[in-house]
Length: 586
Image (tube, rainbow, N blue to C red):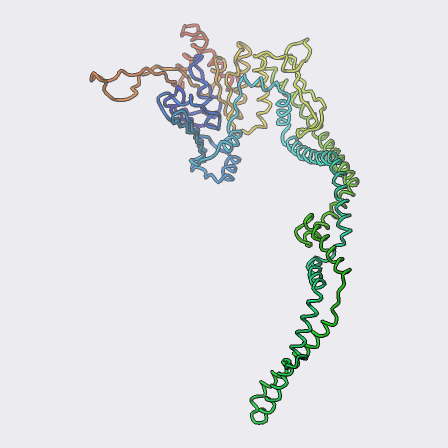
C-alpha cells in the first residue's frame, strides 16, 4: 500500500507531500489541473521512462519518494536483494533526476540502497498496477487476452505454461539439430570424398613409428659414407690394438704400463688400485679394438638400400609438409580422420536418430499443450461467467462475453489463440472485442476485468485508475463508483476522476489545482539599483478535503461548475448515498 508520496521540482510541482488512505483515494480537479502529474510521479519513481522536461524549469534536480507498507512477499524479495528493511517495516522508493546541460541522469534507491531500473521494474509489479482507458488498445491484442486468461487461471495454468515453454525449447532445439543435419548432407558427402582420399594416402604411407624419419636419416648417412667409415674404423683399430706401421698401439703401451706397475706392486701394495685401473683400461681398449674391427669388416656398400631409404625419407617429408610438422602430428591426424570418417559413415543412423528425437519432443509438446488447453477451457468458462456477473451491475445487464480458443501451431505459450468475443446489447451478434465495444463500454469492461482478478491479485498491491470512468455518466457512473469501492475492500485504490458520483464514494478525497505564484529566480540588484521583479510561475497544489463542507463544494463544482444551491444540494445527496452504500445500506 502506498502511504506517502513526496515530490520535489517535478514538472509543475515545486513541493508536495501526500498521505494516502488504505481504501478508495480519489483525485479530482479541472481538466489540465495536473492530476495526471501525480500518477506520472508514481510511475517514474517505480522505474518509468524519464526525459529532460520532467524537471521543473529553473531547477537542476527532481526527487520523487514513495513510501509503501510491505508484506511478507516484498520483505522476502528485499532480503534476497540484500536490502535491509526499515525499522517500521516500510519500503521507501526514491528516484532522483539530475540535469547537467542537456544530459539527464537518473538514480533509483530502495531504502537508500542504489539499484538499477531492472530491479525496480521487478518490484513494481508487486506494488502498483496502473489502469487507464488507453489500455483498451492493448486489450485488443489476442496475445494480451491469452496472458490475461492464464493469469486468471492462476498457478495451475502458469505452472503448466512454464512446462510447455520448456518442452517447446526442447522441441525447437531438436528441430534445429535435425534441419542443420539435413542441410549439411552435401557438405558431408564432400567431406567424405576428401577424407577417403587423405586416408588412402596416409594408409599407403604405412605410418607406424613416430621416430621412423630420424632413424632413416641416420641409416642414409651410414650407407652414403660406407667407404669413409671403413677407412676410419681401420685407423681406429690400428691405434687401439694392432699397428702395422711398427709403432706401438694403445693396447701395447697399456700392456707395458701394466708390467711396470706389477713390478712396483711387489714393493708397495698401495699401487694396487692404480694397477687395477690400468688393467681395466687395457681390457676395454682390447675389446674396443676388436669391436671396431668387426664393425669395419661388416660394412659394405648397398646402393639399392640407399635408394630405398632416400625415397622413403622423401615420402615422409612430403607427408609431414602436408599433414603436420612431424610424424607424431601426422599419425595423430590420421587417427582423427579415421574417427571422423567413422562418424560420417554413421550419419544415416545419426539422421534417423535426430528425426526420432524431434518426433518424440514434438509429441511431448503436443501432449503438454493439450493439457494447457484443457486448463484454459476451465478457466475460460469461469471467466465468462464471472465477467458477465461483474458487468451486469455496470448497466450491461444483457451482455454476452465468450472467451474463444482457436487452435494454432504449438509455441512457448501453448497451442491456443485466445480471442475475447463481446456483445453489449441484446440481439447483437457477438464479435471480437476489438471491433465491438465503445469507449465507455471498454472502460466498464476493464473495470469488471480487474474485479475478476481482485481475488487472486496481491492484496497489498495499489490499484491506480486514470479516468477509467471517462465517457460515462448517470447510472453507469454510479455503477463504476460502486465497483471501485468493492475493489477497495481488498486493495488500496487510487482513482483520478471527473465524475462526482465516483468522487462521492471516496474514503480519502484530494483536490488538484493550479496556482500562480511569484518566484524570484535570484536575489540580486539590477543595474539601476532596484531589485528584480518576481517571476510569475504556475505550480500544482493538492489539498486533502477532510470535512463535509469542502467535499460538498468540490462535488458541486464537478456537478455544475459552480456552487449554486442546486449543485450543493445534489452534492449533499451524493455524499449521503455514498455513506449509506459504504455502510451496506444502498
